[in-house]
Length: 385
Image 1 (cartoon, rainbow, N blue to C red):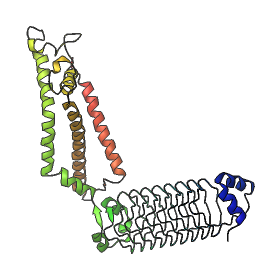
Image 2 (image 1 turned 90 degrees about the vertical axis):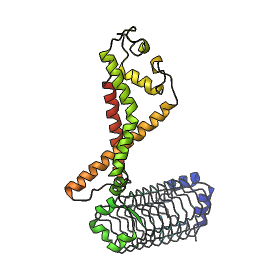
Image 3 (image 1 turned 30 degrees about the vertical axis):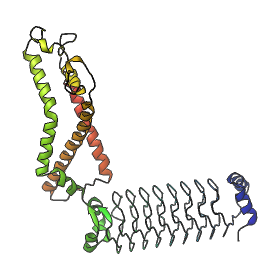
Image 4 (image 1 turned 120 degrees about the vertical axis):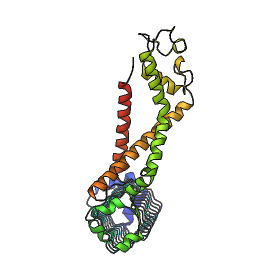
């Protein structure tokens, strides 16, 4: 039974409760079996409190402090525990169905046998957390920190662990049926021995980082949906398709290259007086009788090739050019990346470690940005007077 005096203070509001806790920091908090369903306890200081068997379903516990609290057998289904501090808490056999634990801190907490089905644990910290035999069916654990967590025997069917940190995590004997593991960070200590992995999604890059595939058998690997970033790239940007992309790139660049060549020739080899060039008198106007080539090309692009001598007048085709430019920059980057991976694999005889879902994608984006920067710099340097 709960301490009725303490329960009464808590139900008066978080402000009164926190003031009372500040005055009585050493008093044992006994709220065992208390009915706090639907109560707003956001920000409440409940560290070390005994809440075993308490009903906290649909309770508001945003940023609540529940470190080292006793919550074994408690009902927290539908509760909002986002950004709550629950480090070291005892949550054995607790009900956390559909609970919101976004960015919650659950380091070293004991969640053995807890039911976290459909719980939102994205970006939560569960380092060294004990989740043995916990139920995490359809739980969202994307970008969560599960470093050295014990998930042995846990049911993670249809759970989403995309981008999660699984360094040293123990999944031995766990159910990973149709679980999403793409982009998760693993290391040589991540253990999948005896796990059921039918249709689990994982990257080839991740498997290569595991020690002996994390204990997975060849049969297990055949049951999994393995994404291979190199194979995906080669299927679209290698062989015959590589030439299709290069031809498409040439078609895109041809009008602009032809414009530069023709105008450069005109400026270089033909008199620039109005008498000699009555039809191009605006092209070469400027302080010294010339229009810079980069400015002429800019007008050509901006005006869609129509009356570009008259100065910049925006045309709808300019936006098409911007889209196609970005698309072709991506095309060039993908072609270059594919070819570099092919050369590495052919030269070394080893499979290249590359994934479109891991940190390599961030590096990939940097390469694209760098390529765009180089093109812009070259453009500026090629101004012709």
